[in-house]
Image (cartoon, rainbow, N blue to C red; front, side):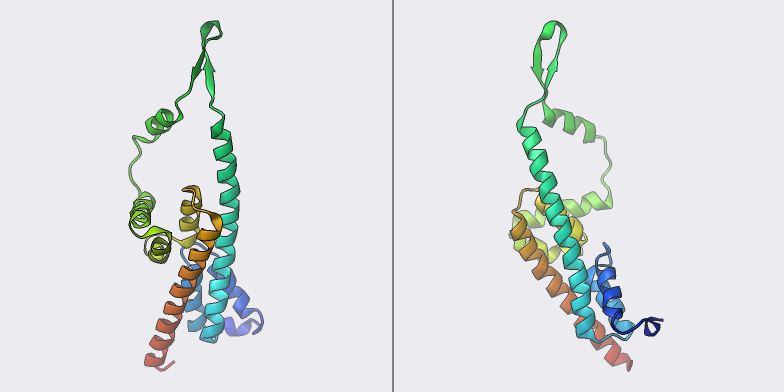
Length: 180
């Protein structure tokens, strides 16, 4: 089917697939290689699509975090009867609202990522993170946690390139063994 698409557009399709969470650069690369695209071209295209999407998440997430932090700097108050102002305890309100929530697989992935971040730092957690969550969610988690956006981008790019390369080598090797 991909043979029907002009050669120039094939890497673009792989790059778009690389921007899809859970498919990402690794899945897009494997797809491209299986479809008959040169493994290096497929890996570069898949990683590029994934990196561009992570770039958008990091910079958008960073802006959102900056606004939230700025907004929280101004403490909200409740005005009671007679004009008495009482400070609102945001932490208590948030913990009450989330205390009855059941853990989901997504929150389990975030908990695993948090443990890895504490144990291995951002570099180690970035490299291990694709085992738990898509890189887009990992990047958003890091930025939301206050990690500087350039540090997040550096380690997400390294992780994407490492995982995409590993999958490209594995997919190429598997196809060679199968005689494709």
